[in-house]
Image (tube, rainbow, N blue to C red; front, top):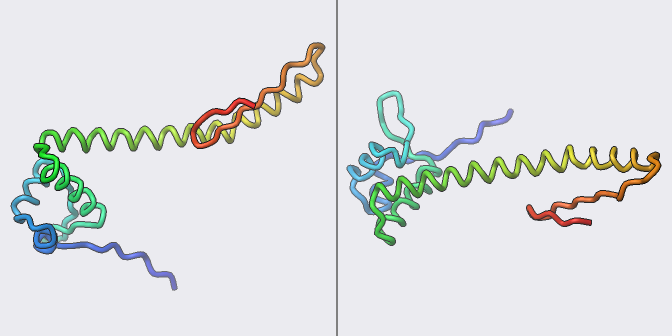
Length: 133
């Protein structure tokens, strides 16, 4: 019988103590939309590992680099947009690999029967960079 993978969750008091911050600071980060802990049916906040990683980034920006909360929000939004763009780019590369490869084979097959054969087209993509063959 397969068991579902349990996600570790931490309460606000545990997180506050672990990172030496006041629970009100965590509540402020939540009000500002910087972190979004889940809630139990009774309203208890639960922080996941992903929330903790995000909190560590926020604390690094504020404590170590002196960034204010408005700056943190901008940085987090830019980071999310960059990650989304990276996912879209990777999806596009998969599309090219899956579809363009077949089209090139069709072009090369068609050019064999042409009066003036076309130059063979070969495109190789390695580590996100195009290498012409």
